[in-house]
Image (spheres, rainbow, N blue to C red):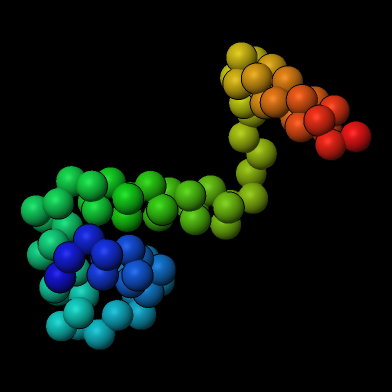
Length: 78
């Protein structure tokens, strides 16, 4: 299995919908590939955050940059 195959199957893997042989092959790849392992972990955490539906407070600097970026986008289009 290569990285492209892992990316294609990431949703099925996280949802527990892969057949055992495919799951084992994917997990074998994850043990040797830091990029894919990190991608799966981050995707899993993102799904968990959305499922929990809890509000996440952004740091002030991030919030400020986001608002500035949105203002620029809106002003450029209007």
